[in-house]
Amino acid sequence: PDRTCPVEGGEIPDCAGMIAAIEAVTGKKVEIIVGKPSPIMIQAALDMMGLKPEDCILIGDRLETDIKMGKDAGIATGIVLTGVTDEKTLSEYRHSSLQPDFVFSSIADVENLLIGR
Image (cartoon, rainbow, N blue to C red; front, side):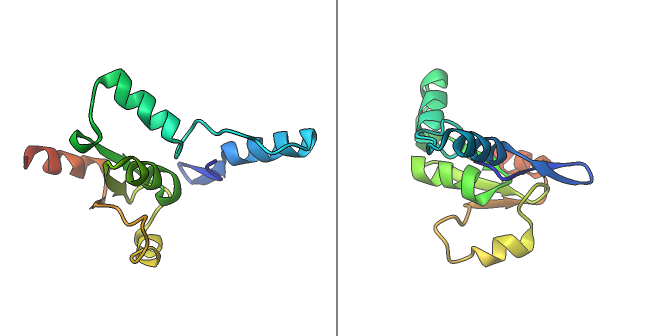
């Protein structure tokens, strides 16, 4: 249900627009969303890779989908500040259940976390 997708130079509409269009023309509410933050999606990924939630970290750029999915699944979470979420947005959520476990300036910083273990 992402509203926007970050691209070079700004953002473009994302899947939420398609969901709204389908709902508008059919008059029916979408019953199941399988994409982020769906528990169906994360469970399928864990099962396919044979992993347990406690052995993973979910890294994304959006608090309400990526980080929510990880938190709901009991997976450690990390936010990358090069996408949708910036420092200001992150500070607005500082007392929220969507506060990530790790904050990365860029995806390149993830290597430091992995090497440190």
